[in-house]
Image (cartoon, rainbow, N blue to C red; front, side, top):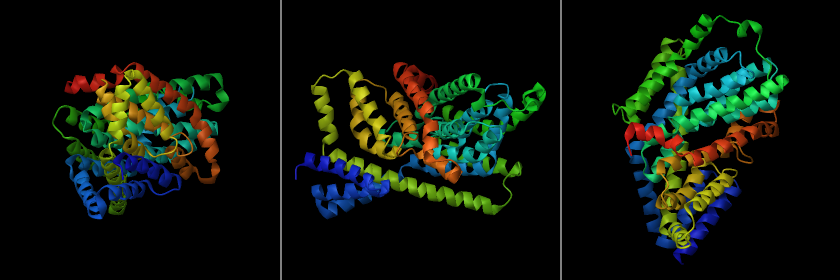
Length: 441
């Protein structure tokens, strides 16, 4: 069978299996095995699967993934999210919509430790949603705000998706981490401005907190705000160590995990060995699931490259002499709509083998495109029907809030995310300034 025909069959199988609900990791492997069998036979197909399974996981970069996941688990049981939320909520008490604004910045702060948007959404769904409901916040605003702000953990380092992007594209993890800082803070600020304007115009959707909290003395507010110090210490140590060259990404992850455990114990939030063991088991389960997806995705992309479909598309677009902006907009539109039906790793596996060499070939910066790709997957985590963060929020609230209400609450934030995406495309320096200041070009 012609290799190009096999390539198109491979893409069709992926979309078919995803549509009927086959788990994404299994989907990649089945589609890859079927099409590699058509190209190489049984022995060649299984041999390549074994090689990819080993070499994709045996690379040193992958070691930091379970360590970052473990650090997020220790941070969750160590009460760091609560510290971030209450510290920022007291500082923001005078602002309209202060609890929602505090949720945005607390998610950003906790994202500097968790690296998982789903975990951040689940934690703050349990933490800040009851507080907002107690003060009379509109249900759509509160649920949508939490689900949307959870995506900051994907952009603000350490980010699992940046690591996965680096694996597909062979780019620097440290540069990608640095590139996500300014866009992450910018998005949180855009959210906060929108919430403040909305609460100012419609006070009933986000009432002010009690007067005794608003009128707390400045000294007392600052004392409460200092409770965020464990997150600050760990983030500065990890990022500073990486950017100064003292740590690799893996060593930074190990240091962060160890400090999270030590601080949680010293602050008396981690009371027993059983909760530590549970956090380690959860991290192991999450790592196994993520590794299965990534092995399948890398195997799939390797076979797809063999079919020459990515090369054919790249050469065709070059022969048409299409303007670089048109190519970029085409990739953005495709990834935007794929985000509605696929999980982020699946989007990367399907698009990066084709889009990345094409965009780099027409002159776009690979680090900058990493931020754009991640922003698109952030939007995909909020859009129906496969909005992972919305489903994570639904898992927290149970029958109290409908999935339709959560998706409806996410819609204004999807618009804000789209505005931020346009700004990042128009002003690429927002993404590339910090990594190139720290590491050079």
